[in-house]
Every structure is written in C-alpha cells, then in structure tokens.
Length: 403
Image 1: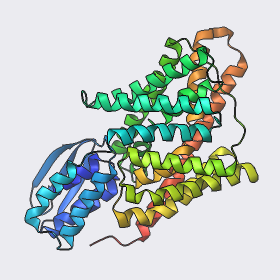
Image 2 (image 1 turned 90 degrees about the vertical axis):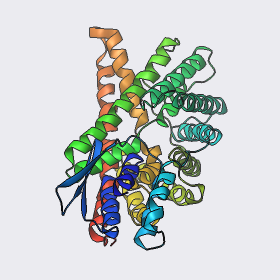
Image 3 (image 1 turned 60 degrees about the vertical axis):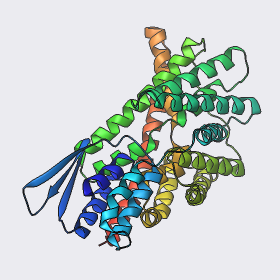
C-alpha cells in the first residue's frame, strides 16, 4: 500500500520530498518504518527493521493534480483513522484511475490559454488571436487523439508544435496576420513542461542530483522537440523565419486579465479541480501585476521582474498547497506560466536556424541577437527557479512535519 501511494504521487507531479514524507507517514500509521528512495524509473521502499525492500517501476512523466489530491486525501483519512486500512488499497487504486480533464474542456482551455499568452506578448488584433486560439485547439485535439494510440510523452508536444508552425506559416503566406511569430510560438508555449523543470530544480537543490538531472533532461528534450516541431512546421509550410522584435507594453488591466486566463488554462491542463482554480488565478494575476509595475514603472529588467513575481507566488502558495495536498510545482507553475521566456527561446532558435542557412556571411547583428535572446531566456528561467524554490524550501524547513 505504501509503495502504491508513493508511486501515484511520484508519477503524477508531486514534489519528491512530499512524496517521500507522505509515503513514510502512511507506513508509520500501518505499523512499519520504511525509507522511500526515489530514482528515475523506480521507487525503492526499504523496511528499516529488516533487510527487505520493494522496488516498483515509477517514472515522473505526468502532472495530474486531481489524482495527487485524491491520493493525498486517502493518506490523510487513513492517518486520522477516518478510513479503515482494509479499504485504503482500493481507494488508492480508484484515485489512480481518475480521468483527466474532458476533451472539450481541454481543447477550450488550450485555445484560451494560447490566446491569453498572445495578448500578454502583444498580439492584440482579433485575427492573430483567433489564429492562435484555433492553432492551439487543433493541437490539443491532435494530442488527445494521439494519447489513445501511444503513451510516448514526447510525440504529443512535437505534433502540437508542428501544427502551430504550419498554421503560422499558412497565415503568413496569405497575409492573415502581421504577428506570425506570435501565432507560431504562443500555441507552443502551452506545451512547455514547467512542472518538470521546477521539480527537477527542487531535486537539485535538495542534492538529489541524479533524479534532478533526469527530470531536467526530460524537460529539456520536450522543449527541444517543441522548438524543432514549431520551426520545422513553419519552414516546411513555406514561412519565412525572422527574429521578432519586442512589442510595446500591454496595458496593466489587459495584462492582468490575460494572466488570469492563462492560469485557469494551465490549471485545467494539470487536471486541477474547478473549485480550487480561484486561488492560483488570483495569485497569478497579483504576481503579473507586480511584474508589470516593476518593469514598466520602476524600470526593472525582465529577469528581475520574474524573480520578484515568482517569490511572491511561492510565498503565497507554499502554505496553501500543503494544506490542500496539491503538488507545489504544478500550482506554482500555473500561476507563473506567462512569465516563461518563450519569446526569447523562440527567437534564439529562429536565429540559430537562420545562422545555419546563411553560413559564414551571416551579419554580426544576427549572432549578437541570438546570444542576447538566449542569455535573457536563461536568466529568466534561473530567476523563476530561484524565486519559486527558495521561499518553498524555507517554508518546508520552518513548518512542522505532519505526524
């Protein structure tokens, strides 16, 4: 039973530390002292009082807050004597079979989320937003269709990005939109594996080097496939690659509302129960308002704005996710997804493709643009990881552990 609970939490996005703590707590209530050792691909549940260990296959590939919440609820009920031990096994198995968000809801919120990101990045004309929404909706439908044929987690983001590139190139060729770059990369942004990046960074911070490295490598492969799929689809359909220029700042009220819509979308992607969406939406809107004020009123940089916004999100969500038994990485990333430097990553990837096609005659400005975009993206990602992890780890350090 302990191994099953740990496997379900680990496989569906709960942080490693909380997975270990919850599983070992359940084992103590069952009268057994165990130590849970997590690795990529397996969990080892070792009995302290005997030379026994149970190895179960487990890969942390998914993010499903509904299942994590259900499993955590079963553990809490057992620990407080509200659920008989005999019924716990079947309750855990039922929690592991909970369905994800329905396909119509998934498609709708994919469209809403991508269009919201388009607004945040400066695509305010109706045609561009409709193209972004339609591209994301088609990609979401294709991803759900593919999930019925293959459990490979890499195929879906690749195909979603490929569709986004093709739609953007077609729109560019028939001159439907002047923001073809945003039409291409905003639907790709909804594919970014943020919780895996954050969980990997947390594992590294806790010196779980092998597991953290594996998580980040997995997330990195997905990001690489997203970039490759988007760029291939764009060029194969006849689009002309070009590094996008920066857009003028979006008015505060529009920026904040769009951020709230993006949070709701990602909460849906991660199967968060609808009744719990209000909190991350409010936190995400507040964080985006703070970032907007820091950058456009105080003259701060994009990395500094991301750092402050993410620290605010972490401070506000750390105690709440533990109380509600939700995975911190999924909730926190939902609130800050609009801060991810997709614009800079896409520009860097576009510049690299252009550099290869031009060859030795490429202008120096192209190389400096690639370096600037790549460096800015790296600094923003580091600022986000630091801003989210530090308050979280301080809270875990200072808060009492459940008994």
